[in-house]
Image 1: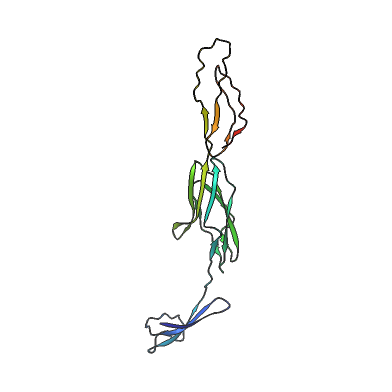
Image 2: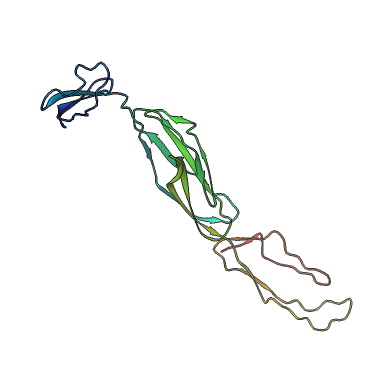
Amino acid sequence: DISYGIALDSSRNAYIVGNTESSDFPATSGAYQTTIQGGGDGFVVKLSDLALASVTLSAESLDFGEQLVGTASDPMTVTVKNIGDAAETVPPLQISGDFLYQQTCGGRIAPGSSCSIEVIFSPRAEGTRAAQMSSYEDGSWHPFLTLRGVGIAPHGFLTPTNIGFGSQAVGTSGAPVDVGLSNTGPAPLTITSIATSKDFVQTNDCGASVAA
């Protein structure tokens, strides 16, 4: 079988002309000739309903950088655009790990239209956190967006960690001992309160936080 030409009409129907020597060349009911009649017969094929959806993404990966454990990042947006000439059905979506999403695409994306997927990073632990966003198509999940972020947290450290006051008369106060509070982590250390128990009192100049 050989094709010699192809043309497209205003309704997006395609027409192909050529020559065939196949005894089983397909023909539709009512065609001018439905079986081969010679050594090489010409054919005209019409293909209809050729409109297709074609979806593009503004990004294939998102990197959120550092985020304090237990807090949520500002959203990052991926724009989804249908550049085809048929509507695209939005499949089920899922996201894994320490990431959340919401989308404005609804159930279908019309030709030439755009929508957005917003992703938020909320780390549950320190270190690099990676995940993927996937769509469910043809019976399985297909990843289409790679996600990455780094969870950070403060590391409070007291120096010294043990204090011995020795003997002290009941009802009197001993000499104060300085204790240093440092933050060895990559995130600020928020101080809610500092307290002692039983027969000990404290004063401090730490303020509301200790910088990283």
